[in-house]
Length: 483
Ligand code: NAD
Image 1 (tube, rainbow, N blue to C red):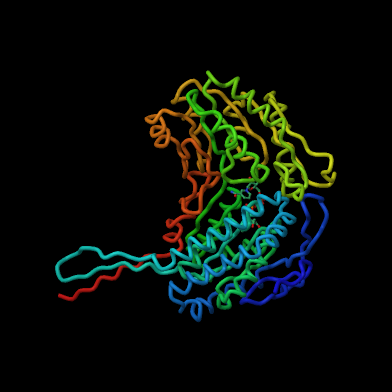
Image 2: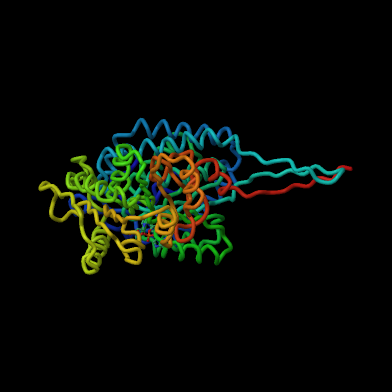
């Protein structure tokens, strides 16, 4: 069903459609830095075509399906995805540089989203509201209509799953603009949607650049809701574009998530999660645990343990399946280098570094994991999202200082707390400004079932879990006066 990877096309109305301009973009393999595919360079005209097709589907066969039938389609799609796990993981790993085991986990998570939202589709209902004598008042949850989804390159399948899965379950038709650096797996997933029987136009994908296809999608008056995941700056542009046609926008914009380790913590349990939360996907995770705050009594011993582990970590080509793969592109690699050279200029000490293995091609975008200590709260390293395998450590003396340090960035996506003190667990959960707080674990975004989203510069709106279904619907109140 999917044309060869060098045959570039959008997926519109269950068909492969060439871009109207005929222009294409090269796709580079981050492990080697070599071009291995081309994608269609979508523009405003392609977005117009995709939105028109989605609108027809919403007004037609897709819009007329019952919630039960939509749920069954999602469940069938999940099965097809799992049946093609190896192929999808291979595509994702080559396209984004993810180690194969991470790419396989992403395929399973994608299927899990469709299982979850498939099961939820026919359980989304309104309420009756007690009102005046002689009235019956009820609420109906209706789909927005056509939803736009702008997806980043760090977890193409997972973020597509959480956003498109919920939108389709709620009855919307979708137009998706994946990232130019991570869209090939989604084209294959779209082909599977057609194979399992989704009516034409329920799902449409237009590939291309953010400033072209992405901007056109966000500005399009035929789009009734936008879900965006990516950087705060682009999120602002998308929100402004949405506002230009009074379109609701959900933003998930990353973070600078802290893990707080108190002296009474179970350090054996914490260690793998302190390390895993920053090296997963080479640190290119919105909910990466990129700051570790350590109670002073255990600062030196815990840093020593972390340093020992960091010095063992190895980065290399995705197919070697090491601790981490390359970064996604040259721009991200340069971004990480800039943070590290600023840190050096500020005199922030590096405690330990991993290695890039000899087999890594020189043109790949590799970065060894780095652990830094005594990172000043005002530094760029403490305040800004690096989006690389860079862990910043600092000491604190008491709960108040820990909370002030944890909350002292513009972000607020996820936080982790490690302590055996039950009362402190609750105090911290209440005081930390984040969309998710993990106590004695760290979910890096958490499960499919758990509502997820940020505060402040991390964005607004909630995805995942049942909560996402409310975001992908609008509520209508019906007041019937019957006397
Ligand atoms: P980005 O925010 O520019 O891109 C994310 C998505 O938005 C892509 O699909 C892109 O094509 C699209 N886009 C870009 N400009 C657009 C526009 N004007 N209108 C509509 N869509 C547009 O992110 P990036 O440049 O790939 O990465 C830069 C930084 O963003 C990273 O270093 C990282 O800090 C952050 N980031 C965060 C996440 C996350 O999951 N929160 C994901 C990717 C990147």
